[in-house]
Length: 428
Image (cartoon, rainbow, N blue to C red; front, side, top):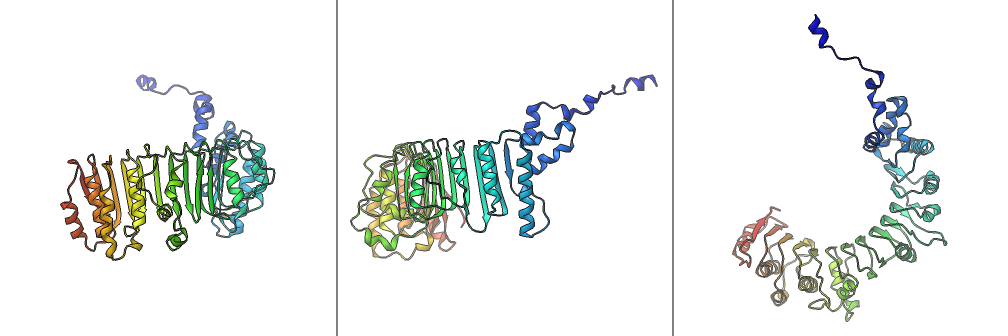
């Protein structure tokens, strides 16, 4: 009996029994930061000391995780969401760094104007608004006066700044998707953000000319229907992804004799490191007189991805111009446009002269996707293998199983400048 008493646990004080109430502040902050708003508010029942801890959260995210509603009624969901946001903002007592409102059933409600005004008065740093349903929501004027903003992200919105708008002086990241804004608004918005480093423009309307004037811009991602693009004061721009969703092939005649779009595009991009040319943007670059090489080589370019029509002489010339102008290119991705691959005509032999002028390259990794094994494609692959003495891996993925045996035979037959190069065939 005496031995059994010695094994009993020592007496615990109330403090030791209620350890969760006496956790260090940095620990409770860390716990709350991993919870949704709904879960964070529910921690108030843990103890009296946790009752209002959630009210100091610096990042407020209102998405599908914050709302548990069984009803499919749009008005029920909207009213519930409005009450939650109102409740949180009313009781919140700390600083608010980030506010994100993104619910799949969210429509543009006038309450957003009221919340935006409240947040601007709290010196919000990150503002994210994604309106998934209904008409594009007109951004309230108060948001354009919020000079504390560092990151602004809008989805399905209409931007019409007041005449007094003079830019966001501290904004470093701007992400606009499915937005409407006028030509002058788009230009002024970009140029009046002197610290802007990241810019994303996707599926926009209201303007057709992209004039990018941003001295600190480093990352640029754009996809949409536009007629022209120009850069100014973008000497720090390093990562670019551009997708033109408009086929300009039928308009080539009106560009006859025009100076090269390639030259205009790269003149203010001396330090680009990564370039993705998507959709039909290569057609735009091929407009005008395509030079054999750029006047100033892209010495920093290490990654290039291009969507290409192998039957278009102008496009292939533009790609070869980029290859000749990129002495340190290490990764190349070519995505064929299968919808434009037709039977090769009498101009096919013209490719060979273009290919043979390709210089020795520093390519280490090459990927070709969506090819059919036609002669222009095979010529291109052959030259890449012959001109890449340090090539390590070439991955080939055809568009169809038709003719894949013959394609594999051709790939095995090609000579390679690199003894270490391996060709990986991926089933379509």
